[in-house]
Length: 500
Image 1 (cartoon, rainbow, N blue to C red):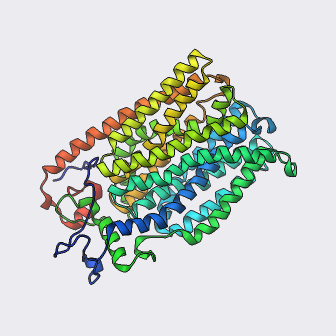
Image 2: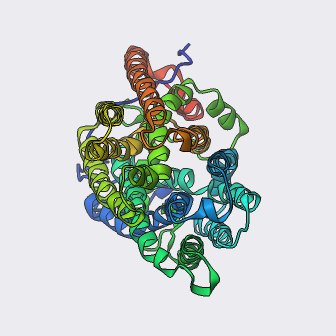
Image 3: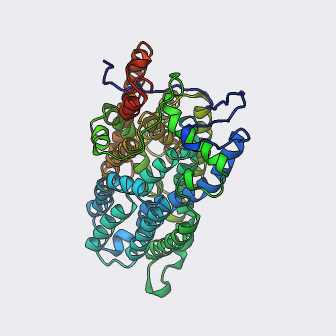
């Protein structure tokens, strides 16, 4: 019998193509598309069409999501804590509770996304969180802000894991990280945009009797709702129903997605597309998701630590609030460019772990610089440089970490649940990071920087562990006979099949 371990991939072919009997690249005639001639399909043209129709709106959705969850950091340095008569620990609790509900609702949301239409589900939750964000601008005390953050976590929960999974419905493994990075880089652009926007909106202080920090929440929430309404008409559901693709192009896209997991085995096995609760159970018991969580935490603890506290950290270095808002901009713009560039090289080389490991080393180096400079004192420029380096490692590392795990989950519903678990439980790092940078530790924040560095070190160990196990299991798979199971049995086994 075949072993029950899962053969995973860190290295895979640069491109995937299908050949017709006459040898023309891109021509297929699977049973479900019998009679459809795909010999004229141009793979590069199809991918470009998909990129232009899908990625811009996904990036805009995530930009607004990250903007709305992180703008509380900008509001803080504009007087939120003082206006609501909150203490430092109370502010940290408002950051923390967001992640409890955010993590709790990610798995059910991803399963609903698969059962419902993305063009309905994603804009609907976007309207909900935009409404919550707008109402955050009128809270009057700590309790009101705390409850608002709880509901913001519920409504935002489905977006990132949903979009990350949505990309796997359209793109193959060798193409996924570049697209993940293109929409995830919106998070770093959101960081830059947040600083610029907060700088401008804060000038509205006193208009309508509202403080500047209230206008940050109100205007950004209204913007989210407006974009959500547009999204109802601009998000496409699945390749099978995409009107911007021709029938042969749809056939080509669907076929290569269904058979991508077995393309190197010499035995074409389609991925399972039907729902069974056993796929959800398998996701909850898959070892790679839990080892991958430590890698995830090693990236996301620094991600949330910097996104929530970066304006405050820079201000504590001796800069004014307005200067602190503006100094966040070059950090995030550079990180966005690097995220896309690293993803492009990763997809081209067919490797994940070397790029993730290198980027996480950069994160560690950045925090080592922050700790050393903060301990020495009076060198704010060096601390800023350390944060700059750390953020430039965080944003390229994150898409690779999500893509690597999703590449190795087979079966549509197992991938959906597995990605939600990985991202959902992984985002508990936000709850932890919300308490790393305490007001009592300012302006040096040695404890916060040290905790971030510790998580990075553990994450690096997880990357090494995943790489070693994937290599070991792939070696076992290469020595297994292919004919032991039928195509139907291999499809049912998903990523546990010898053909995967």
